[in-house]
Length: 356
Image (cartoon, rainbow, N blue to C red):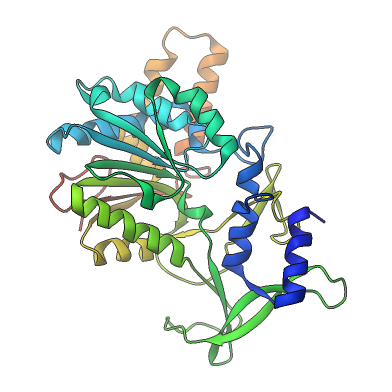
């Protein structure tokens, strides 16, 4: 049993079951035992790999997307270049290098990183120190002014609530104690008034009020000062039912309640709900598009070909394999979606379908 599991068991024994979003928040960001607060989770030695770690092309395409949008929006100076959950800083480093090809962009940007993990902040400082980034613990702490915000695999880590359909009512799913073992277990909580499309009894519905609140805060910021958000994540385009909360440890799925604080927890993003939240607060929404489609439209294949020129066979093979993993429909190409949210007066961003 992990140290955090012991703390949660004691808390539940005293106060009763906790909601799934409370469990998820504690498991990821508990100040002493939270998963993101105590380790570098990325890479082969960690628990998972994200697109920027797969290939430099991913971050370069994101950087060019930002740098292309900036002059068409009037080349505001300064412009906040923000990343939410920047990992080891790999995406931002690649984006800044690529974006420097657009005259004036590199001098105009001020780098801001929203990162809760002290461990990952150290990696980011080493990777991005020359760009003098400013760190923030929360989206609400970001400065005013025109901003281009990048969120790659950020929203999927925000806590979700789960609801279970029982006969003609919804009940909140909670984390309690197994009566036999005393360990953590899912239990049915109180009935809630949940206005959603009717589905079959027994199905699980997930909703992230936190994600929708973050989207609202970002849109209010973009509406006030101008800017755009580019989010890349895995999830479903239509809002629907089904349990997607998962735990990953050492690149393998493990039971969600098995090792709180020592396994990553994520849930699929509802692009429909986030799009609706953005529009409700006056933003324009573009997409979503499949990641593979988006990267191809931005020229990822041409970039890979350029990188391969003059390289040895092993390097070329690695570059091609990395790109394939990003764009192939059987790998990350369709699993991950790309969505842009912009100020209504900003130009339409590249790589995505018509905006609304």
